[in-house]
Length: 42
Image (cartoon, rainbow, N blue to C red; front, top):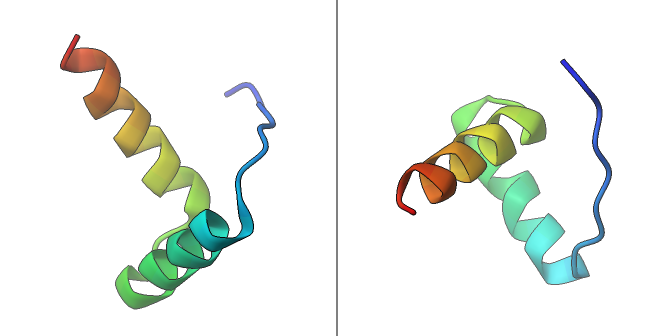
């Protein structure tokens, strides 16, 4: 897998962290799944 970097507002990162902690999955997995769903909806 390739590594990508992006900027996000602090409140978005906080929400992402809470989501990851509650579901015991990584930030990367959440972002991958969200991006995949977004692109498939096109």
